[in-house]
Amino acid sequence: MNSDHLADVRHLRALAGNPVDRIADMQSGIRRLDSIVTNWRTFGARPRSLQDAEIIVEGLRRALVELRTQGEGADAG
Image (cartoon, rainbow, N blue to C red; front, side, top):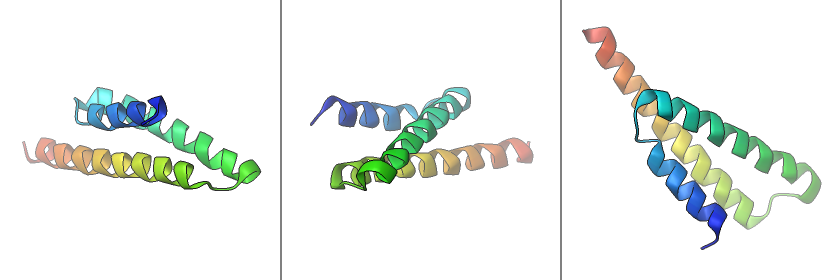
């Protein structure tokens, strides 16, 4: 496991934090995803970069679901 993968795992775990931190983590994930996809234009999509992108997208999806859930709870109150 390389350090980028470990950083991605830590990043995904951090997405379970409070909403403010989660939003900052989402912004970081989006920037990382943008960097990966930008490299695809030059180098093509490699298996490792595809895996990294999938991890980031899944983390973003989970964070969005959590934010939606928290938002619905706040609206109910």
